[in-house]
Image (tube, rainbow, N blue to C red; front, side, top):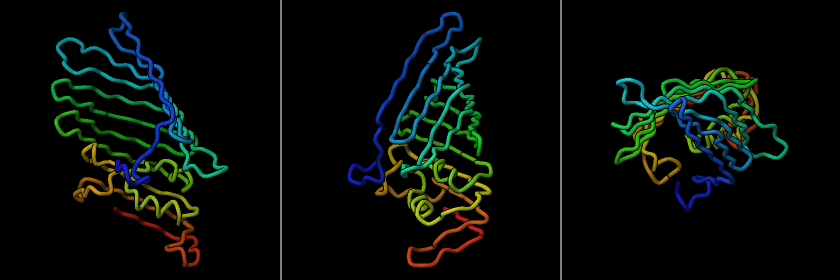
Length: 219
């Protein structure tokens, strides 16, 4: 992100990665992958298998993982997502990691995702996320800080409670543009849709709280 904008960057406080080769499975076992960013914690394990038969792609799978997400507010209970399943392949010819199917869920919410990460001359991230019904408090923690940052900031400050009926996030952006407010992206590069019911929110700081409202946001 931009080195001059504190809202466009984040600090990784701790990482741990261990990779072992399993000769019986002809696979690399990445266990654990641990990342801590402020109050957010990520832990998962992955298996990268060698191509089978005439295949040229490398199967990648994640069958266990845990995410603990927080907005960083004092006294906040983190959103824990303790079920993670990902099926992907790495194509060494195209230099692309393709996420065919991903599922992430916890006690209060869940999401499905797919996409790709290309490592060519211009590294690109394509990602689609569709989340199920959840309370606003969970949605705030699930919403990545670098995606639709302006709308996210408004939602964090102005929406106090309610139920998110649907969230859809679609990205197709160069990796070096993520978190950079100085880079103008075309409209199709980022799409964010959200609908909420029973919401309590303030449109602006000087207006009274609106209750039991229907909210629709499209970015």
